[in-house]
Image 1: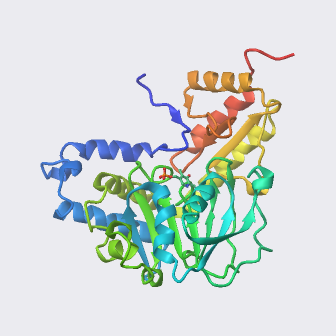
Image 2: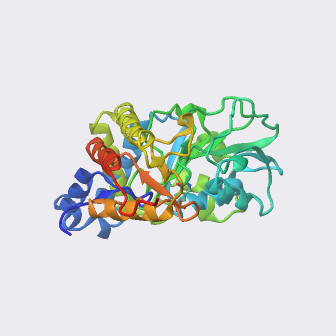
Image 3: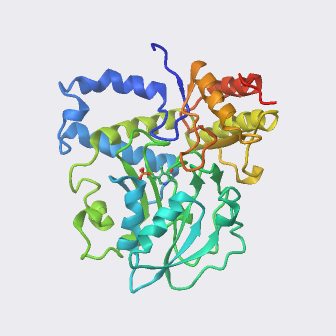
Length: 365
Ligand SMILES: *Cc1c(COP(=O)(O)O)cnc(C)c1O
């Protein structure tokens, strides 16, 4: 295949083509240094400029205040599920958990290893398809933090707002939506995200943490697991994922050059409106998530009778037409189009038309 396809993969996911081409240009000989960025010492001057640019571009994009630190770690978002309680919990404090699906379940799994927690809201009864109303949640005193996942990659849900009455700093897994919309960073204690959905290649985990929380890290935990240690070393305690950070810095620059997050949020809403519109007006498919809870990043849909043969046919015909990565997560089945930042409005428009025109090969009587 010589043409690139439209990549709807949930992650690792599409990266802006302009960024891939720029990286390709610099891959062999980075800006006349005689080396690839991948071959360079993480203590070199050239790499240091990349590292600083990544931090300052992200700070500019999200308008991150001075009292927060930006960390580039490894181990994915999954590693954060363990690192957060190790660092933030003091004196047997509890954690308030908002449980909305597989990712929060994994975070709860780490808390079960000897920490106190309470599930203050859950949508397990709704099969995670409808989000819990957070306005009337009773949060608990003496909690170290309040944990939630803002965008559920598997079920296709997204919280449009964040609770303002939690009793402890909000810690939010934003892996599948970071940089998709404007945020007020002051509303959060910690934001974290694996890079492979909306930032760049896998291998980098972005953590944005309020500096007073760094004081909580106990010295007894392993050095690599200690946020304070990474903050003091500016994410250069040991060898960071240099190539991933380089790619992230290019993506951040790309977003800044295209109007920042206000403009990106508008493009994402435009894309979501077109795609959900095509699904809602289809005779064959429907979206199981109520309108207010729908994610603009992961669009989940199904055949109206959950006919798996028709869903498989749709995936195959779509693939032949150049649209790939449409299979729902293995835990839920169905169909899913991930429409992260790198997905263009033109591609979404073409795919929306494809949905409207699609006729299954084998029409069940
Ligand atoms: C993909 C994903 C994860 C897991 O990320 P890893 O980097 O593979 O550990 C966690 N949370 C959310 C919301 C995700 O989308």
